[in-house]
Amino acid sequence: MKINIINTSGLPLPQYETEHAAGMDIRAFVQEALLLKPLQRALVPTGLQIELPAGYEAQIRPRSGLAYKHGISIVNAPGTIDADYRGEIKVLLVNLSDTDFVVNNGDRIAQMVIAKHETIVWENADSLTETLRGAGGYGHTGK
Image 1 (cartoon, rainbow, N blue to C red):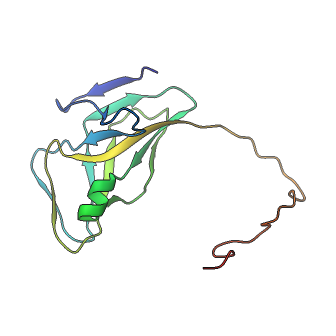
Image 2 (cartoon, rainbow, N blue to C red; image 1 turned 30 degrees about the vertical axis):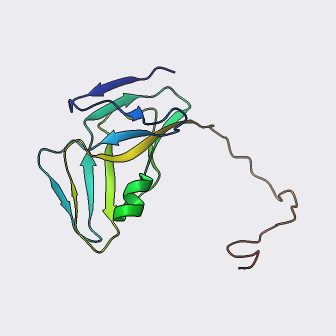
């Protein structure tokens, strides 16, 4: 699948880091280093705009290495870029650690997964099909 992209950052385009990777790493496009203090969040620009076809979304997800090593995540993970959005992709990073974290220009800060989705139409009903689980919610299967 080919997708139109505008890259005003001058940084490499999002790319798969391994042959079977689902997500492409995307980079921070910042004029100067950005300091994220513990529990602070920041909207980090990427310099990227994309044109997805109808029926697709771009999911913006945390990078596992940043999460594990530094406690860096995404507040609204996964973030969704809709097919009709044409603005710059920005990543809402949060520092969940107890130490400062610096984001530099060109740092790989998130991953983007392109996914197909369905558009549904609700149909009102008086009942739903019975299942073994039924209405069992959080923790209903025990520890």
